[in-house]
Length: 429
Ligand SMILES: Cc1cc2nc3c(=O)[nH]c(=O)nc-3n(C[C@H](O)[C@H](O)[C@H](O)COP(=O)(O)OP(=O)(O)OC[C@H]3O[C@@H](n4cnc5c(N)ncnc54)[C@H](O)[C@@H]3O)c2cc1C
Image (cartoon, rainbow, N blue to C red; front, side):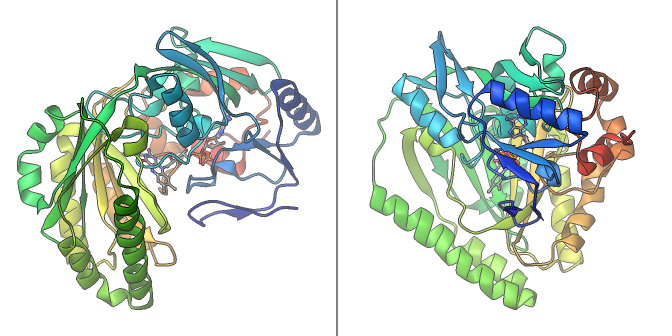
């Protein structure tokens, strides 16, 4: 039995079977078999979630053999659900097309990114699932379903934590390929927060990183440009791999061995922030390599609450002498109408906090969670949080509708592991 470990190292388990189906018939057969045996099926994408969504003792499916472009239409494409975002970006670029927005890594599978409400940043862009216009999946009875975004059930299936079925293909709404100019600078956190509306409304994409205990943050903006990419692979390698990841890995190891140095290490890291500008094809510029592993919690709060929440977090860290040197990330996402999207019904600021892998994170995350909750926070489904069904239900106006749709497509709970049962409040019959 293979041991499955997720990227962040928060999950390790041994499913009885790890299957790599190559087509929908094989998936349907596995689902029907599991259903008849009373067993559970979970699907793993790239294993980049921190929560135990993919855990199962029974059947784990990987769609690594179901990747690639299926067909290309007018500013749209059908994409195999297992396709990794990085590969997808390259395939679309060959067709003169691009996704409208991405998060800060491109390792995820298409279905994995949709299923947890994965997002990038930018006031005009929803979570990645809002880029989907049709979804095909094998439901809990082994039947193939295809839903369009005009159908009510689509709204629940688009962000569904793998609880509706095995997504096999997604039709994405696309843009003609475009180039982005990215600019990063060092600025006082108070100044950035004071002009936050200017930043968020006057740039296509805006985010910032803030190092705990420091007065400084790093605002980052992206705007469409006619400029052509300047390829400087050596410089990029030196900055991204050697400086940003290599040096940070070294100081992180020092901090792991001597956590009391967090405050100094975090300030030192912020002192190293510098300005930079880069132009590249869109699919090459959103993502940053992440060689330093960490554990993350992220909450979405209403967009207007962002600066207040950020200041409260800053005070909490200082007053409680939290041992953390990893920066926090602050990103905007447009509100949507997807039933379980953390941005449902409201423009949202996502604030994420990170802890170096191997360092204690409970005190930090448990201390910040009440701050987010006091401001109507909803957790990222793929990242650490401490909520259960009773906490979550009042946060999602269409919670019951999601549960109805889930029951419709998976009446016997083939896709429900223990974690999802706790999350949804569903007792095993
Ligand atoms: C370094 C790092 C950076 C990250 N950056 C961001 C970011 O910028 N923005 C953001 O929002 N999140 C971010 N995340 C979180 C990440 O995007 C999500 O956890 C995402 O769901 C991971 O995708 P995955 O392909 O690894 O899916 P997994 O983690 O393997 O699975 C996630 C969920 O999708 C389901 N699933 C996967 N494939 C299928 C399928 N074919 N059919 C049905 N269900 C399926 C799984 O069952 C599970 O419920 C980051 C994570 C890491 C580790």
